[in-house]
Amino acid sequence: MAVAEPPSYFPRLIEDEVYYCGFTSPKSYGATSYFIRRQDGNWLTDSPRFNEHLVERFEAMGGLRYIFLTHRDDVADADLYAQRFGARRVIHEDDLAADPGAEIVVRGRDPLELAAGFTIIPVPGHTRGHCVLLHGKFLFTGDHLWGDDSGRSLEAGSDYCWYDWAEQTRSMELLQQRRFEWVLPGHGRRIKLSADRMQAELAELIGRMKLPPRLDQRV
Image (cartoon, rainbow, N blue to C red; front, top):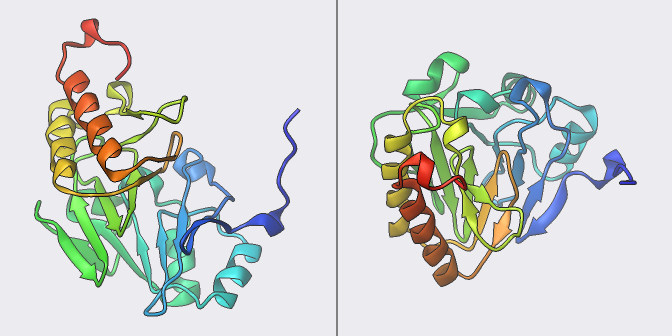
């Protein structure tokens, strides 16, 4: 039987000052959120459940400067964290209805470098306004992309595409222009591969996404 991890384990280090927050929220269907510690201002990607333990840990680690919201489904308690820390919420204009008070609105389809080392890439598909965040070797993917159960390959899900599967496929091709080693999703398994292997797996996934659904049940 699995043993529940105590609250003191969170946020839990993944690698290089990127942390798994825990405390998932039913408001975001249990989506995972991540904390990124930076001297020039910390980031939260998507929102965990508002929790005083996390608040205390975030305070001890330097607070929050930005709260990046990948898409409308995973907003959860972002407004409460923004109020507590004076953080600026970031969301795409096409999903803005989910958090209309967001301080920074991403517009259009061009990548945006909001701060040094942080690039927001619009990837419509799962929702119209879905975006991913690239930070060095880490790609925070929301519901766009995740690792399969084996931890050796990549997956996306047409069954969970609320906007347009063809758009999501085209969006996936944009990631072939980027180098990264980690996929850190909101749902599904996180995965680390070499940058070359990640690109190979991404190309294989895109090929499967282009097949008629009846010919491939994996995507």
